[in-house]
Image (cartoon, rainbow, N blue to C red; front, side, top):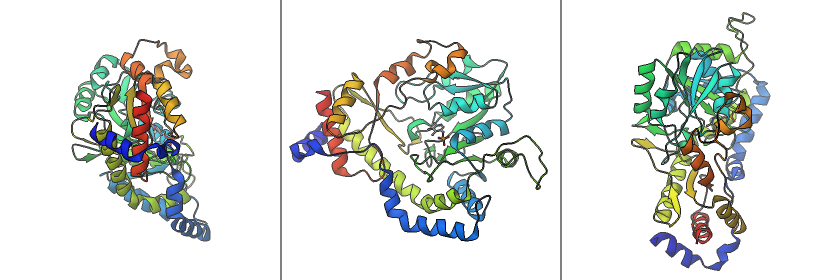
Length: 384
Ligand SMILES: *Cc1c(COP(=O)(O)O)cnc(C)c1O
């Protein structure tokens, strides 16, 4: 515990009152305020509110970041999953395999198109979808699988691609927590037939409101998402399919263009913070850090550890000013909304076991060294 011990001693009792927020969205808004104001003024002056030039510009830049030929801005990450699944050919009555350990939006998007989510368990070390669980979950109605790059770490895509191709499943990535993450050097967003991103304010790349995007290298899929997001319309008032009102606001695209050039630096700051936590917490008794999969460069949307007596530890951290989170406390197969699917406790033991123990520590690009040291010191005290 060399680093953590030294840090604790050096800091002394003064730290007891330091407040460490879980995320700090106000910091970025202060730094970027002048650029935001200019972008908003420019959009207002041109009244360029829908499908404007900023949307196109942002889509081109975001596609490049993801190593894809196409990105299509949409209204949210949830809608991005839905539209990507539709474009991949998923239809009402189909089954789509999703992890039990994810944010509910992954499964909701499947349900929104009248398909049925089929859950699989996660790996104990990473919390990510276990590719080994996918094969046994396949039925004649299964048409797609949604790997979720949870916490900013990519799923074991080689193993998943092998099982998906064996069963003829489309792979649609949920990359809503993984902007800029890579798997064996390839960016999240380019690892399946298409991928969904969220620009919810707290994500690694966040709008000032809701937003999302679908990325793909398939021009037909891109075209379909463009149709579906805008009332199925290609020429004005010609509606090829029954679509949705799922556009990304041009104003949000303009604001995202301000932030996009900073993403790489913010992700690097998150990785530095994570490395710091990793080395300070390695060997801490009663705590397990999240393992990193082979070939993965993570972007640490969340920094998750596992502890016994999680709720007690969380409470004691709070008493020392340290905010924390739980991502996620109830696996999807045990959510009331999915009662009708007939799952029960014990179906996915790894996800259920993790849900009792996981704790997300403060993580945001601007988190200061002293704040991290305080988190580590408070955590060690809470575990003692
Ligand atoms: C945030 C998130 C979503 C949904 O994104 P919204 O923009 O909030 O609709 C989907 N999946 C995962 C894993 C997420 O973290």
